[in-house]
Amino acid sequence: MAAGARVLCGGRRQGPCYEATWLENVDPQQKISCREVFGPVATLQPFDDFDEALRGANDSVYGLQCGVFTRDLARAFRAFEELDVGGVVINDVPSFRVDNMPYGGMKESGCGREGVRYAIEEMTERKVLVLRVADA
Image (tube, rainbow, N blue to C red; front, side, top):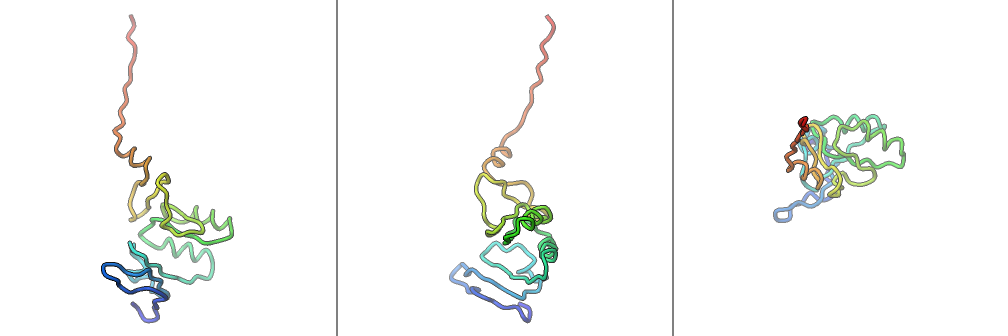
C-alpha cells in the first residue's frame, strides 16, 4: 500500500480467506481502490461535500451497486439520479439484494440483470404468430 494508507481492522489471512478489512488513506489509483474487489474489503475516502462524494463514486470504470448513508431524502434521490451504477442502496451495504429485485451493474460491471424474472426472460425464446383469417 502507498505511504499514509492504513489498515483500520482485518487484513489478515486465515487459511484461504481474508478477514473483513477496512482501509483508509488509500490512493484512489491503487488496485484495491479502483478495481472491483470480490471480498470483504472497504476503503474509506474522505470528502468535503456531497457533490465531491458523487463525483468520486462515479470516477470509476465500474458501477455495480453503491451504498449511500444519509438521513437526507433529497440526497438519497439525487444519488439515485446521478450515480452511474446498477443499484443505489440507501442506509445499507451495497451488496444487499433479494432475488426478485433486478441486480446487476453498469459500465464494466456487466450488462443485464440477475434475479428470477430476468433469468426466466433470458432462458425464454420469444416467438410471434400472426394469423389473418382468409375470406371465405
